[in-house]
Length: 235
Image (cartoon, rainbow, N blue to C red; front, side):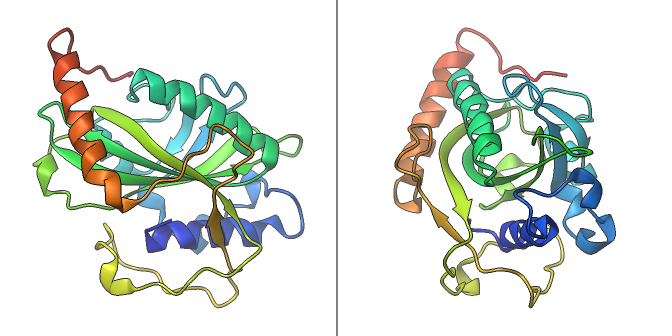
């Protein structure tokens, strides 16, 4: 996790568990995370191959240019990313562990940004986990978007989130500015760290060192695809 708000969300999810494997959606108190809600969302993953937004923050809807509630989560992802995400959602629900996604998002005019998405599993009125409480944060300079909406997204990495060891201290000078006011850290938040589960083939590590290479590769693929068809958004 790179963004401070991602750590805040996972810490909140962990406190909500209260000794359980995962919390329930009804445990969420919007007042406790009001500064995070604009980019937060809830996914219904009863069928992980067809996850759908149950709720989505206003700023997140504005980034994609339409009301996300009731639409498919995978609609704006490229084909291979959609297949990988469906497998990752199943895995996260099975393991009862949050997951961090790294992606490159682009507009129809090929303006690109780096995004970080956190997905934390939860139940709904008890039972097995079938939902995710998540949040999307922009990690790179938003100016390449030129105020345009995101139409296409490609997954470039994923990591499971575990809580058994402390995280290293942040260097806040290296953090990109958040989209809204920064929340103070909660003193009772558990210590967290990111690990790559080598036993799970669907998870892959990612780093900033090869991000530019991935972005240029992404632009090349997108340009080739645009010769045949325009990027599509599921509405």
